[in-house]
Image 1 (tube, rainbow, N blue to C red):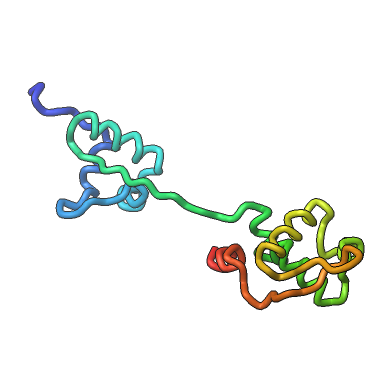
Image 2: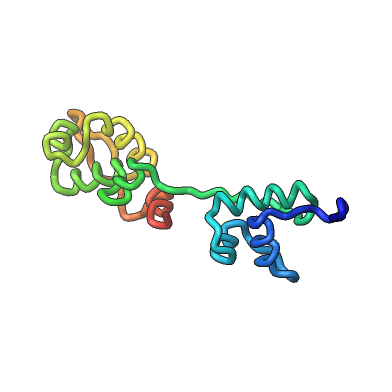
Length: 147
């Protein structure tokens, strides 16, 4: 047997047979083309790369997804929007809003700050809140809709 020809493992042979000659294929697609599991494919790809039989181009992909808090905000609304909705219902003090159950006490500071920053509320006498404008969706709400 000649020492010039590298010996191929059955996993490597399966991968080489499945590779198209004209275009790249993703590692994630190879299990479907070879009947190997993804771990076998990854191992075989590394072996073939080490033997200079294939070239590998790595691409980085960043995925964004909602956390539990983000999923809840998408479902029930951001705290600042829920604050505005409570004020629309006639609750105009934090005590009334908290008693109504729309906001949790730990959300109040952020909700009030965001609602003021968005120009949705203002404070009036006696610590009461009044609506300024709340028709426009905030950038955060638009982003939640897209996600």
